[in-house]
Image (tube, rainbow, N blue to C red; front, side):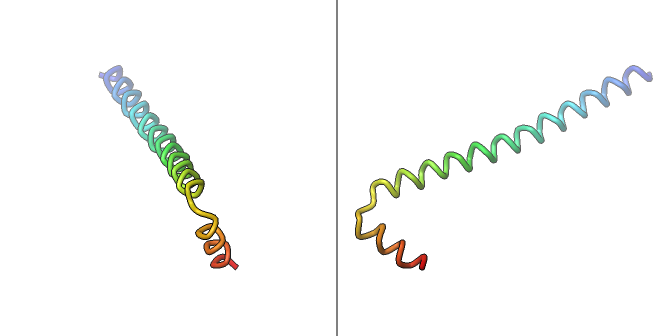
Length: 58
């Protein structure tokens, strides 16, 4: 019986660790992907659009 408790505890802990790691890595991956998409869309903008955005920042 105690061996069952230990094994279930290890299974539960490994599940929690895997879940947390996947959430963190997935979030980072989505942030990087979103940043690449923003950079790609800005690279395709015209000079007039870039200047207008820069004026709005000021």
